[in-house]
Amino acid sequence: MADGRIAAVVNDQPENETPHPSRRSVPITLETIGGNYVMLEVAPSRYVFYAHLQTGSVRVKVGDRVRRGQVLGLLGLSGNTPAPHLHLHLGDTIEPLGSEGFPTCSTNSKWWASARRRPHRGAGRPAARGARRIVARTRSRSPGS
Image (tube, rainbow, N blue to C red; front, side):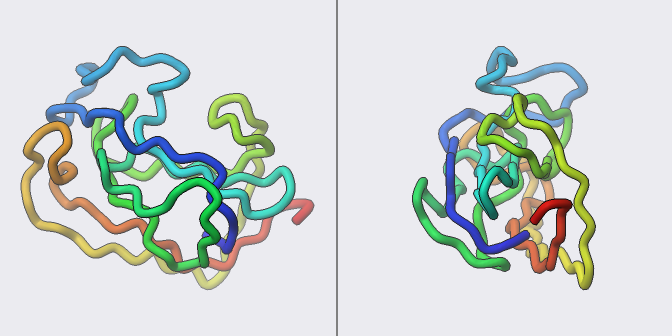
Protein backbone atom coordinates (compact mmCIF):
# COMPACT_ATOMS: atom_id res chain seq x y z
CA MET A 1 0.00 0.00 0.00
CA ALA A 2 2.83 2.39 0.87
CA ASP A 3 6.46 2.61 1.90
CA GLY A 4 6.96 2.12 5.63
CA ARG A 5 8.51 0.24 8.53
CA ILE A 6 7.36 -3.17 9.76
CA ALA A 7 5.96 -2.64 13.26
CA ALA A 8 4.70 -6.16 14.08
CA VAL A 9 4.67 -9.65 12.56
CA VAL A 10 2.93 -12.91 13.47
CA ASN A 11 4.04 -15.80 11.26
CA ASP A 12 3.56 -19.02 13.24
CA GLN A 13 -0.18 -19.51 13.74
CA PRO A 14 -1.49 -22.69 12.11
CA GLU A 15 -3.84 -22.40 9.19
CA ASN A 16 -7.35 -23.76 9.26
CA GLU A 17 -7.49 -27.21 7.67
CA THR A 18 -10.06 -26.32 5.03
CA PRO A 19 -12.34 -23.40 4.30
CA HIS A 20 -15.34 -23.73 6.62
CA PRO A 21 -17.92 -21.30 8.04
CA SER A 22 -17.09 -22.08 11.69
CA ARG A 23 -14.22 -24.59 12.17
CA ARG A 24 -10.88 -23.02 13.17
CA SER A 25 -7.46 -24.55 13.92
CA VAL A 26 -7.06 -22.56 17.17
CA PRO A 27 -9.51 -21.02 19.63
CA ILE A 28 -10.29 -17.49 18.47
CA THR A 29 -9.06 -14.82 20.88
CA LEU A 30 -7.88 -11.23 20.48
CA GLU A 31 -4.40 -12.67 19.82
CA THR A 32 -5.47 -15.23 17.18
CA ILE A 33 -8.34 -13.53 15.35
CA GLY A 34 -6.12 -12.05 12.60
CA GLY A 35 -4.06 -15.19 12.19
CA ASN A 36 -0.65 -14.54 10.70
CA TYR A 37 -0.24 -10.86 9.92
CA VAL A 38 2.02 -7.92 9.14
CA MET A 39 1.55 -4.47 10.66
CA LEU A 40 3.13 -1.72 8.56
CA GLU A 41 3.71 1.78 9.97
CA VAL A 42 3.25 4.18 7.05
CA ALA A 43 3.21 7.46 9.01
CA PRO A 44 3.03 8.54 12.66
CA SER A 45 -0.10 6.93 14.13
CA ARG A 46 -0.96 5.28 10.79
CA TYR A 47 -0.66 1.49 10.59
CA VAL A 48 -1.75 -0.86 7.81
CA PHE A 49 -2.84 -4.33 8.97
CA TYR A 50 -2.47 -7.26 6.51
CA ALA A 51 -4.12 -10.35 8.04
CA HIS A 52 -4.91 -14.04 7.41
CA LEU A 53 -1.52 -14.83 5.85
CA GLN A 54 -0.13 -18.28 5.16
CA THR A 55 1.85 -19.90 7.99
CA GLY A 56 5.57 -19.27 7.54
CA SER A 57 5.12 -17.14 4.41
CA VAL A 58 5.85 -13.70 5.86
CA ARG A 59 9.03 -12.38 4.23
CA VAL A 60 9.69 -9.38 6.50
CA LYS A 61 10.62 -8.85 10.15
CA VAL A 62 10.01 -6.13 12.70
CA GLY A 63 12.07 -3.05 11.92
CA ASP A 64 12.47 -3.77 8.19
CA ARG A 65 11.92 -0.86 5.84
CA VAL A 66 9.70 -1.86 2.93
CA ARG A 67 8.71 -0.22 -0.33
CA ARG A 68 5.33 -0.07 -1.99
CA GLY A 69 5.07 -3.15 -4.23
CA GLN A 70 7.35 -5.36 -2.10
CA VAL A 71 6.07 -8.87 -1.38
CA LEU A 72 5.15 -9.22 2.32
CA GLY A 73 3.74 -12.76 2.38
CA LEU A 74 1.17 -15.12 0.91
CA LEU A 75 -2.58 -15.18 1.39
CA GLY A 76 -3.58 -17.92 3.76
CA LEU A 77 -6.33 -19.36 5.88
CA SER A 78 -5.14 -18.42 9.37
CA GLY A 79 -7.18 -16.81 12.15
CA ASN A 80 -10.90 -16.20 12.13
CA THR A 81 -11.65 -16.62 8.44
CA PRO A 82 -13.99 -18.99 6.64
CA ALA A 83 -12.09 -18.62 3.34
CA PRO A 84 -8.75 -17.31 2.11
CA HIS A 85 -8.73 -13.54 1.75
CA LEU A 86 -6.64 -10.51 2.64
CA HIS A 87 -7.98 -8.49 5.53
CA LEU A 88 -6.54 -5.00 5.20
CA HIS A 89 -7.27 -1.94 7.26
CA LEU A 90 -5.66 1.35 8.21
CA GLY A 91 -5.74 2.29 11.88
CA ASP A 92 -4.23 4.70 14.39
CA THR A 93 -2.38 2.22 16.66
CA ILE A 94 -0.35 -0.97 16.41
CA GLU A 95 -3.25 -2.89 18.02
CA PRO A 96 -5.11 -4.60 15.16
CA LEU A 97 -8.49 -4.65 16.88
CA GLY A 98 -7.95 -1.76 19.28
CA SER A 99 -7.27 0.91 16.70
CA GLU A 100 -9.61 3.48 15.26
CA GLY A 101 -9.96 2.86 11.55
CA PHE A 102 -9.42 5.49 8.88
CA PRO A 103 -11.11 5.71 5.51
CA THR A 104 -8.73 5.39 2.59
CA CYS A 105 -9.00 6.15 -1.06
CA SER A 106 -6.71 4.85 -3.74
CA THR A 107 -5.80 6.27 -7.07
CA ASN A 108 -4.13 4.32 -9.84
CA SER A 109 -4.74 1.14 -7.86
CA LYS A 110 -3.49 -2.22 -9.13
CA TRP A 111 -3.35 -5.27 -6.90
CA TRP A 112 -0.93 -7.78 -8.36
CA ALA A 113 -1.53 -11.42 -7.66
CA SER A 114 0.50 -14.37 -8.78
CA ALA A 115 -1.70 -17.40 -8.21
CA ARG A 116 -0.44 -20.79 -7.19
CA ARG A 117 -2.90 -23.22 -8.63
CA ARG A 118 -2.68 -25.93 -5.98
CA PRO A 119 -5.39 -27.11 -3.61
CA HIS A 120 -5.05 -26.44 0.11
CA ARG A 121 -3.19 -29.18 1.95
CA GLY A 122 -3.71 -28.16 5.55
CA ALA A 123 -1.82 -26.27 8.22
CA GLY A 124 1.68 -25.12 7.41
CA ARG A 125 1.37 -25.94 3.72
CA PRO A 126 0.46 -23.80 0.72
CA ALA A 127 -2.57 -21.65 1.39
CA ALA A 128 -5.99 -22.55 0.11
CA ARG A 129 -6.64 -22.73 -3.58
CA GLY A 130 -5.27 -19.67 -5.37
CA ALA A 131 -2.61 -18.60 -2.84
CA ARG A 132 -1.54 -15.12 -3.81
CA ARG A 133 1.58 -13.04 -3.33
CA ILE A 134 0.57 -9.93 -1.47
CA VAL A 135 1.85 -7.04 -3.50
CA ALA A 136 -0.01 -3.77 -3.53
CA ARG A 137 0.85 -1.27 -6.20
CA THR A 138 -1.24 1.58 -4.88
CA ARG A 139 -0.90 5.24 -4.18
CA SER A 140 -3.06 5.85 -1.14
CA ARG A 141 -4.18 8.87 0.72
CA SER A 142 -5.86 9.02 4.07
CA PRO A 143 -7.19 11.96 6.06
CA GLY A 144 -4.39 13.64 7.99
CA SER A 145 -1.50 12.04 6.13
